[in-house]
Length: 592
Image (cartoon, rainbow, N blue to C red; front, top):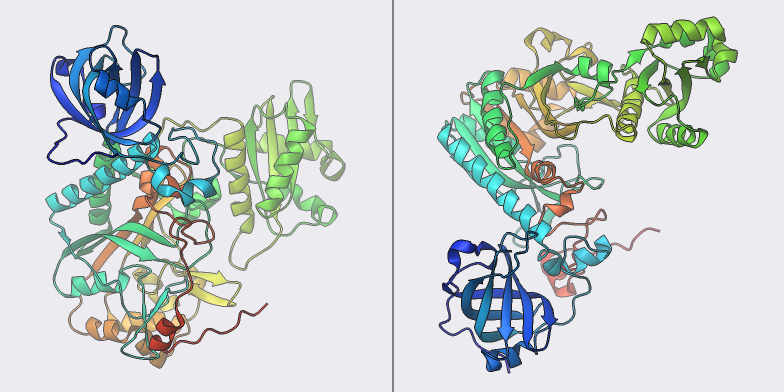
């Protein structure tokens, strides 16, 4: 027979008990984490959100409570009345380890089936099982800690931005479809048959309209939905800090975000110095092969194309050749080099070319192509020392107006940095990337598309290149990077309707198409739009990095899988035919 809670009131969290609570009467509530029956004594570890407390049931002192404790099993929900006492032998492994509670009464509030996995930090269950039983997975202390950290991150963001004069304003979840690169998630209208709302990929247009509305400083912790390819650090729905300012310099936006990140990082004991470093986009690509470089180690890229020119025909490569010098890798085995080559190919390399520099001399399969003198010049040019390995690569595919060898070499750099333990995990390196290209070439569409979105501002001296040389146009966009991870993107926006119209034409949109997609926004631009700009940062990614996790799913309460499914609620699911009929929707047979 289960007990009722009645008027019983919890007086302390289990994990909050300390020596100062000794000799106090308490009421604790939670889940049975572990039970140990020693006959005269039964010990249970009682777990709640704050941690674990040890409860003692003494048969001699409280036979009724002891008898009831014999019924307890893992994950039963109970309330315990008792007195806090000092332990005879403390347990330094847990914060409550100096005290325990001698139980006088036990209330069994609910029983539980045996869980499919232990409620511990380290579990052997597959991620699929954990996500299917997410309500149990979330009981694990590590996930509890992650969710608490996420709460504190968001709370600190709100406090900081309020102090800086920002208003938190909500924008619609049901809006017009205005494709921004990924596929829209559509919601059919029951009232307006054949018409659809779209779930927001971002509040971009609405936050710009808020600036037109004179709100001056806006922010929002918002849900965004983007139907794109998935991976460990990407979700169908995600949460971002969205922020916009009127009449800003780029530095004003940077300052606000740096203050936010400084205070957020302090939550995990990380001291962040302002201002953050700045780096030009092209410089980042040239030096690190990435627009989100990890600055916690060196190994910068070096263009060695000139040394490979004599062997271009023999080696069958196109474009440029980039090289990195890997300290300590000259001793790598054939197996390690083969694994490196396989990784490089998966990253888009035509192949890799290696040169070992040892105390005995220089050795490389390239000697037959470059000659001994050519190898020596290559080694001298990159500054390789004994014990180091030169790794060079060319890209398999070439894209016009782009040096694809840089991206390939950038991936090889990260691989080597990880394998050689060159990355200082204790460092937190923030970086602003600026000077992005306004457009990028779409191989799928065979045309120039917005590198960010079509409202990104243009460097004034490049405006006249919109129609003649779009690949040379620079944007007023910027990214914030932390330890090789892009935290978010932003820009100073286009606020003039004439420039916005030219931008749409450069993207191949006719006046009719632009009006159809963005009509209400284009109309708003004609009523005195102030210069404005903003940024959006990924809350999920910030929480993941600060929690030391490798997957976004470990900092989101109810995440989707890489197949965009919620295994716990079994979403997406089919719906009744009546619902479809009411919406005027017919399901086409799947094309196989």
